[in-house]
Length: 308
Image (cartoon, rainbow, N blue to C red; front, side, top):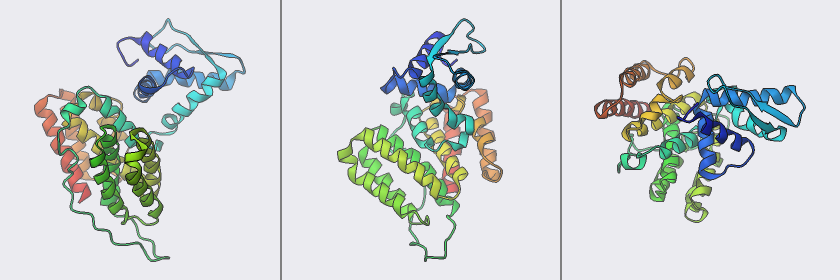
């Protein structure tokens, strides 16, 4: 399913359904759902059976490969499963807290912290200068570069928080506030990020991560181009994965094929598409230090060009 021990995976999912997980174990189970189609299939069968049967016990059907397993799940717990599943079933880009998910997956990868050296958040953009708020009755579209920048920075902010680097988190928040001056009708979101910055030292990391996740959803709704925002998030996360030599990111369901297929027509430029195709070829040949450097350079070029 995901690990080398399918029974352990299924036991983990059953414990999640029963509400017996918390902390790191729950995060691992949610990550399994996000990355494994077989895990999702098991859960989908639970939800499908829940709708078809009004019973006290629902069978968790056997997946394609793990044939000798049945887990019995209470009806009430099956409803909770639907909450986790529905974002994936509805559509990949409908999940609003992508930065939160990317940051969690990246920071949980082995050796990520060691591989991410000082200066990782330098993206090569010119200084953001706000143009001021629009005159009432004359709305203006958000420039694509600002949409893309905010997508990248939403991931950078979450990573900095999970690394407990509050100094960097404050700097990134200031930059996002400055960029938001170019986004119409975003004053409340800007105030939210200002509050995040003010409370980060007193709220603690976990609460700050939750606050940033909620603001990310509001931000995505305001930028006017959620697909480009999501592309910025993916590109930022992928570039950090390349820096940290995280092979699992590129080989997972969130890899190159995901972003190539998930972007609606018109989102990717010719340069974007060529860069992704080149990275896909490198991944298929197998990533080593030299190819990781090349992947990182290509992604950094996309980030610099798109954000300037």
